[in-house]
Image (cartoon, rainbow, N blue to C red; front, side, top):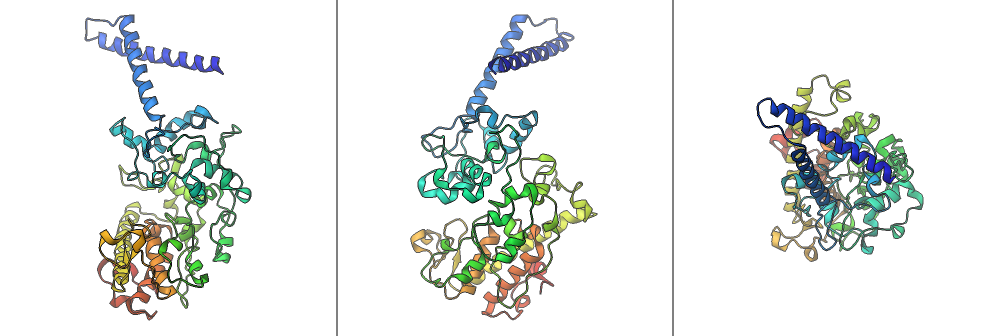
Amino acid sequence: MKKVKMTYLGLFLIALTLLFVGCAQEESKVSPTTPTQQNISKIVEEEMHSMMIKALLLHYDNPNTDEVEGVNVNPEFGCQGCHFSKEAVIRMEEWGKSAHGGYLLEVKEKDLNATVNEEVAPAWIHYDFKSDDKLLCQKCHTSTGFRNFVTDPENYNPANNTFLLAGKQREFLYCWGCHRVEDMSFELRNPGKFERVATYSVPEDRISAVPDLGEANTCMVCHSGTSSGEMIKLTDEIKGKDFGAYNSHYLAAGGIIFRTIAYEFEGREYDSPNPHASIENLCVACHMSNGDHTFKAIDETSGKIKAYDNLCSKCHTDEQEVMEAMEKNRKGFEASLEVIKNLLANRGIYYNPYAYPYFYPSPNPKEQIFPNAYRDWSDKDTLGAAFNLNLLYHEPGAFVHNSNYTKQIIYDTIDFLDDGELDYSVESTVSGEAQEFLSDVR
């Protein structure tokens, strides 16, 4: 193995030397001075030194800080944990600009000495998730926990997670978390159907109805929420508990797509079909078009849908029309959530999405701290309305993932909150973008 590595290094240096020689020859056409072998060697040496510095700054995380300075290399796999193919180079660059990678490369491109902090990547930095009091979190907030869970969901025990890290070091979702590095196949880990990995048990019929999603099974583990609105209905006593006891968790796209997670009001139907649910490989098809590991469905430079040509165009014939409709729906979606927020405030329940557990009896941000959390829930429908607001606020793509279901949930939440009854009074409660967004829902 050592000889192979040295051979590759030698070839790399030769190629780099030839590159500089070629550049030097081009320069000699306009310059009377031809670089000597000594100058070329010096350039190569400086470039190699610069590369080594960058590599060190990208692959070292200080165990004494809460921030992440660089990738934590798993000694179980070494370099191969991420550098396992030619394509991996491209994918690692994309990953480094994704939420799964803590936006590490974006941060380092601005300043090599900068760190990834909680503001940039709260999902990995907010807690030291490898600690014993965060066992339940480890399957989605550490690579070690995720790898162990998706490899064997039935027998997973977080107490058996072994972290090869020191001090306060954190793990992003590394390549070896999703891909089978240990057997050299590098295949995507697949935990199987959603019913094998769901954290909540109701609605049982819908959970069991989620089909085998192929590669997207892997995504469903951490993007379907950790509790459902139906769990509220099964709770005997809701008073005296802060919202943390009912929190759906975040970015629960899978729960929205397959209608397993929201609080649904009695007497209303929620059976509108969702054409997006039938997309093959679902999440992967839209968020990893052509293998893209930024996981962003929209190209930030062009503003275009990355999967449009290969996927969306099968149903939507006008890309510009789709983009305009998405933007219009986004504004209506956000305006509708603001209506729910204000209606809850009218009941003395104030929502702050940046201060866990999110709901408080006071509108003053300074008083919105955990000990002061709202606990005086009058009924399950009011708690369910709060649940839906928090769920959708933390699932900003809901209006795309399952437009009809999202609108129904929002409509009924507003319908209940505006006068305490489900009486189709929404049209007289909302206006502007929210009214347009919710028109013809019921």
